[in-house]
Image (cartoon, rainbow, N blue to C red; front, side):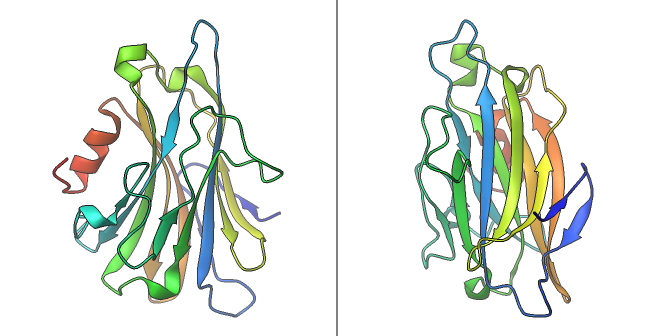
Length: 194
């Protein structure tokens, strides 16, 4: 089942003494469709160097850029409805080949944003049951899960969590930090000109 993580907490992703090389980050949510005909949330990943900046736009993986240049981070596709596909239950998934990432990449953050939130007058106050989880992609074992419990009445984007690298390996940290600036604002926080 993995470890349930509280907001701000961190858990090691080392498994059974062996090196973890391939993870899947699953993200899920349920939109409150009361009074709304369309509600589209989008998961993203931004790979960062030690200075907290993305090396280039190539390392900003989202619905318009589904992969880094060498396939280290791959978005499995945009879910336009908020309905989970298949038995997995995740609305969107991002695969990360930890063994292929440059040593200069020390963090990967996972924002989720509401598409056209301002036009549709939607916010994370309209979202229920949001979570992020990390799986060992080879075995399917869930390593960590964070269920977001706070509703953000005005935020149009949120950093769900991040994976970080240090000398001991990789870890997951639960963030749950809302932003009213949307995905563009988050990208700019990490040095991307979008």
